[in-house]
Length: 119
Image 1 (cartoon, rainbow, N blue to C red):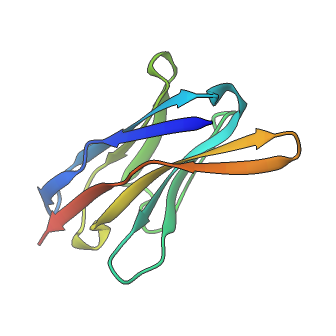
Image 2 (spheres, rainbow, N blue to C red):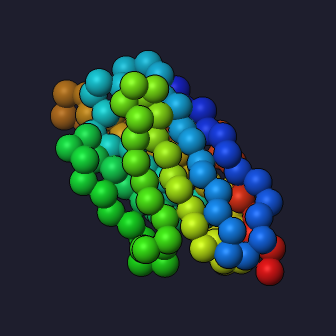
Protein backbone atom coordinates (compact mmCIF):
# COMPACT_ATOMS: atom_id res chain seq x y z
CA UNK A 1 0.00 0.00 0.00
CA UNK A 2 1.03 3.54 -0.74
CA UNK A 3 -0.37 6.67 0.86
CA UNK A 4 -0.20 10.03 -0.88
CA UNK A 5 -0.85 13.44 0.65
CA UNK A 6 -0.94 16.52 -1.54
CA UNK A 7 -0.57 20.15 -0.64
CA UNK A 8 0.07 23.49 -2.27
CA UNK A 9 -3.04 24.30 -4.25
CA UNK A 10 -4.78 27.64 -4.14
CA UNK A 11 -5.93 30.71 -6.02
CA UNK A 12 -3.45 32.57 -8.19
CA UNK A 13 -3.77 35.23 -10.91
CA UNK A 14 -2.90 34.39 -14.49
CA UNK A 15 0.85 34.47 -15.00
CA UNK A 16 1.51 33.46 -11.42
CA UNK A 17 3.16 30.37 -9.97
CA UNK A 18 2.28 27.57 -7.58
CA UNK A 19 4.14 24.57 -6.32
CA UNK A 20 2.31 21.37 -5.52
CA UNK A 21 3.76 18.77 -3.22
CA UNK A 22 2.95 15.08 -2.85
CA UNK A 23 4.32 13.18 0.12
CA UNK A 24 4.43 9.42 -0.30
CA UNK A 25 4.59 6.79 2.40
CA UNK A 26 4.24 3.03 2.61
CA UNK A 27 5.64 0.62 0.02
CA UNK A 28 7.39 3.27 -2.02
CA UNK A 29 10.44 1.23 -3.03
CA UNK A 30 8.39 -0.65 -5.61
CA UNK A 31 7.07 2.47 -7.32
CA UNK A 32 7.84 2.72 -11.02
CA UNK A 33 6.58 6.25 -11.47
CA UNK A 34 4.97 9.17 -9.73
CA UNK A 35 2.71 11.41 -11.71
CA UNK A 36 0.44 14.42 -11.61
CA UNK A 37 -3.01 14.40 -13.17
CA UNK A 38 -5.68 17.05 -13.28
CA UNK A 39 -9.40 17.15 -13.81
CA UNK A 40 -11.28 20.27 -14.80
CA UNK A 41 -15.06 20.55 -14.33
CA UNK A 42 -16.88 18.56 -16.98
CA UNK A 43 -13.69 17.08 -18.37
CA UNK A 44 -11.88 13.79 -18.07
CA UNK A 45 -8.87 13.39 -15.84
CA UNK A 46 -5.69 13.93 -17.82
CA UNK A 47 -2.03 13.32 -17.14
CA UNK A 48 0.02 16.47 -16.66
CA UNK A 49 3.51 15.22 -15.83
CA UNK A 50 5.25 11.95 -15.13
CA UNK A 51 8.47 11.06 -13.36
CA UNK A 52 9.81 7.52 -13.57
CA UNK A 53 11.93 5.81 -10.95
CA UNK A 54 14.81 6.18 -13.39
CA UNK A 55 14.40 9.93 -13.48
CA UNK A 56 12.76 10.31 -16.89
CA UNK A 57 10.12 12.99 -17.17
CA UNK A 58 7.30 13.61 -19.58
CA UNK A 59 4.79 16.42 -19.88
CA UNK A 60 1.49 17.11 -21.53
CA UNK A 61 1.91 19.43 -24.50
CA UNK A 62 -0.26 22.03 -22.81
CA UNK A 63 2.18 22.46 -19.91
CA UNK A 64 5.57 21.91 -21.55
CA UNK A 65 7.96 24.70 -20.74
CA UNK A 66 5.79 25.93 -17.87
CA UNK A 67 5.57 23.00 -15.44
CA UNK A 68 8.40 21.01 -13.91
CA UNK A 69 8.11 17.74 -12.03
CA UNK A 70 10.85 16.76 -9.61
CA UNK A 71 11.40 14.74 -6.47
CA UNK A 72 12.99 15.14 -3.09
CA UNK A 73 14.21 11.66 -2.23
CA UNK A 74 15.08 12.59 1.33
CA UNK A 75 11.45 13.54 1.97
CA UNK A 76 9.81 10.95 -0.34
CA UNK A 77 8.10 13.88 -2.01
CA UNK A 78 7.28 14.72 -5.59
CA UNK A 79 6.88 18.35 -6.57
CA UNK A 80 5.12 20.07 -9.42
CA UNK A 81 6.35 23.59 -10.05
CA UNK A 82 3.80 25.46 -12.13
CA UNK A 83 4.80 28.76 -13.72
CA UNK A 84 3.06 31.11 -16.13
CA UNK A 85 -0.27 29.73 -15.06
CA UNK A 86 -3.28 30.19 -17.30
CA UNK A 87 -7.00 30.13 -16.51
CA UNK A 88 -7.24 26.86 -18.43
CA UNK A 89 -4.92 25.28 -15.86
CA UNK A 90 -7.75 25.53 -13.34
CA UNK A 91 -8.54 22.03 -12.11
CA UNK A 92 -8.25 19.62 -9.24
CA UNK A 93 -4.74 18.22 -9.33
CA UNK A 94 -4.14 14.65 -8.24
CA UNK A 95 -0.92 12.92 -7.32
CA UNK A 96 -0.62 9.37 -8.62
CA UNK A 97 1.83 6.62 -7.80
CA UNK A 98 2.18 3.53 -9.93
CA UNK A 99 3.50 0.42 -8.25
CA UNK A 100 4.69 -2.84 -9.76
CA UNK A 101 3.95 -5.93 -7.68
CA UNK A 102 4.78 -9.25 -9.30
CA UNK A 103 3.40 -8.76 -12.80
CA UNK A 104 0.66 -6.23 -12.07
CA UNK A 105 0.58 -2.47 -11.86
CA UNK A 106 -1.34 -0.78 -9.08
CA UNK A 107 -2.33 2.87 -9.02
CA UNK A 108 -2.67 4.96 -5.89
CA UNK A 109 -4.18 8.43 -5.70
CA UNK A 110 -4.02 11.40 -3.44
CA UNK A 111 -7.11 13.28 -2.33
CA UNK A 112 -6.63 16.08 -4.85
CA UNK A 113 -5.85 19.75 -4.43
CA UNK A 114 -7.69 22.60 -6.10
CA UNK A 115 -5.80 25.00 -8.33
CA UNK A 116 -7.70 28.05 -9.52
CA UNK A 117 -6.18 30.56 -11.92
CA UNK A 118 -8.05 33.83 -12.26
CA UNK A 119 -8.03 35.83 -15.47
